[in-house]
Length: 446
Image (cartoon, rainbow, N blue to C red; front, side, top):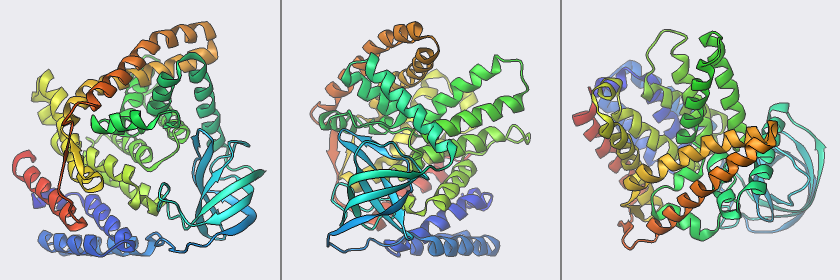
């Protein structure tokens, strides 16, 4: 198993960089990484690992401020993340004089990443709901927002796409179905009530509400199929797919999970251009490194960790030789089982329980959500181009969306759908993943 790491220096670099970023919150990840490097027994990899660890320490996000006073705030800030829309406003990260804050603002005027806005309101401590997010040191509760300057066009194209999708979906579907479709397509989950959220979590499919690897794979597959029908060179097809995926990531909020997924898709598909076979572990590592280098505070983002863990579980078990040998049953169950098992230690650590229906949930709800993503995007584009066709498609989508919500609600309420687990520390979490890696080395490595 040691050779699996020695032949993938980017994987070692990703682990070292992550351990260095984690210095903000504790030293145990770095200590365990040092023991891992000693186990590798290779001086070249050790030097490479030390550099990656040092780079992570240099770029580590700031620790939470810990202050609790409230001040009046009136100043110009730069929007540092794509805003999330809620029922009564929007929320995002903003930056002022090199310090990041969470911003809670009225829904208008519309603004997005890179814009400069003048904010008047109150600056206070982070609330329990917001918590430490993106390196924020406090919360600005805005009473008024005035647009000052716009950022790069790409972010506004994404804003226009997401707003167009939201408006069209809300006008064609019932509120509950529209909330589901907006969530699974563009991370717009403001319309989902707490009971629906809880049902998705207990059924083990809450990740389907956050655009990430599953959603990018669905969209990329549909785009590749569509591009293959056109008489254009493969290189041009891939370039077009990459451009659409980038816009999709921006429209979906450009959050760490979807950024990682799009980068991984670009890396994997680019292997064709160099006549190489894509390596899943290397692709995940490169995408993870790029995401963390761009946004170091993502090291504290649960969505990023869940996305990486699920994808690593998938690519570590599902190899090309096995895929060729497996029949339809194994092709459906093994990837789902691998990705579901890979997130169990993390969900147990964070939530104190795991969903025993996770495998069944992904096998049942996954195909329905995949259909909803593709069908809803097609219906949206059709509505923009030919409204009657789009309206007819949305009428066909409505029963599938309602069925998905009813199914998740029913299964999520079954007694015993989740199992509580004893609390454990970060060290225990790392040890659980160490056991999974050892199992992979014993049974899964070709």
